[in-house]
Image (cartoon, rainbow, N blue to C red; front, top):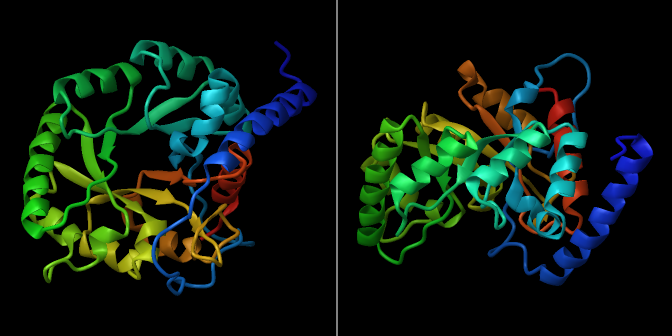
Length: 296
């Protein structure tokens, strides 16, 4: 198979056509609620002096590319590698066994650094076994939502038990937020319940910066409120309508967030994500270039 620039461009166009059609058909309303004021002025990549993210901390959440991966798994992984990605965060293996998917990642010089895996109702030992095959040492519970604080407390206790099992196997387990965890329920924020109920040794946090901003909360303040536990960022931008946007085209000031949370380099994964991209490969490419070039 040719690796010429002309071939790569042609292949990418074909993949985008297939994935774009599927994505457009499946697009729904981007986010619930009213758009909140952005934290800062948004961010084009800065110029001049300034820190840049190490490339080995940049990753992409494969959920962003699910329509492209379903249309052409190998071709899409190859395109991600051509864009420059070396790290990915998994959200399933698209009908392949862990062994088969690991071989594909290796073939295209991609490394799974993290994964979204739900412990609820799952065999945690099997999840741990799969993680070791696929090669990631960080994983996250992607979503939870309950109607009462009592249910949130029960969830947090079970999350902590799962996190302890992962930790003993050498895997760092965490929780990925949306916006509702930062809204008060019965006088308490569910996120605070999770933070207080779980041990910092068992559970870290993957901050989804878009959802935190949508909740009307400053990510920097939350980072320091939970200092030492936030080790991953989901980096996705917010458009003028409050919905998702490609990185650098929205109003979230990532340069400020990265600069003010860089202390000690505690955040190890900066994961590009977009929940409903019309052109997944373009979104992935824009995201990679933005994080690679951003100065903060």
